[in-house]
Length: 220
Image 1 (cartoon, rainbow, N blue to C red):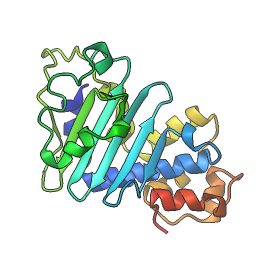
Image 2: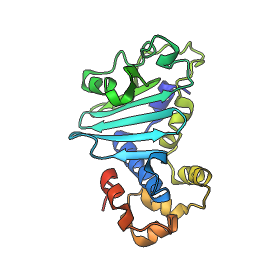
Image 3: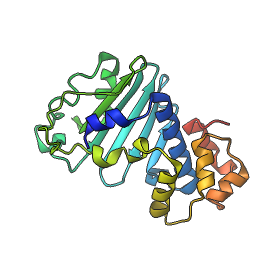
């Protein structure tokens, strides 16, 4: 799988935003005391006009999604890919960001998506608010898809955005039983209640999650 395959399978922007908030909220409930160790995070106040979803596997693989009135911009970084800027001259692989529209150029140049001037990107997708589909750059994948960009594993939970998919992953990651009905409730953005939280993690209270709820922008 590469970025073009992902572009055909991703949901629309609104669905992607809700899915990102749901996963971030679930991670916050399941791991309330270690926010930097959570796999999924969401900042509804990243800037005055932008929201940010992040996936970080803790081992050098990550993606970021910038949501704005203009649409959505996605960048992913697989540090083991030979498409990594570190494997070449420190610039993105040809075609990855060359045709990103001007409305998203600030995202391409965003300092937090770089380290010492080297962009952390092997995958890039975008969708303007008026687009009917996701778009990617004109990357040469040798027709055999032999150039891995990270898409084969980055976006599993966005492409197969089901509560059961998250539950199966979370039970492995957190080594705990995760209630499927509770996951479904959060995926449907239902208001959090003490009982709902207790089904997921009886050691955390609604009051303790106040800052996370506000940061994520989870509906209340």
